Length: 93
Image (tube, rainbow, N blue to C red; front, top):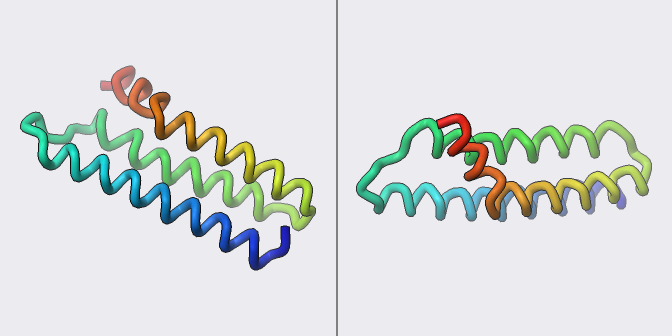
């Protein structure tokens, strides 16, 4: 993975993450219950998780390293966005 493609792929994932999380925030805005800390934490942590994985990928310029951590990031963020994040939010709230 070249430096340019590394940044492009990560920015695409960030934009997808941003759009999904904005849809979630919009849904909370339409609801009657409002939005508390337990709903905001998983959304905020998804961006923290993305940035941690981005820094891990950026740490080395080895192509295999970047591709492996990119795939780990994709799998982790997929599970986080599809249910693990909401379970974590219910656990703390």
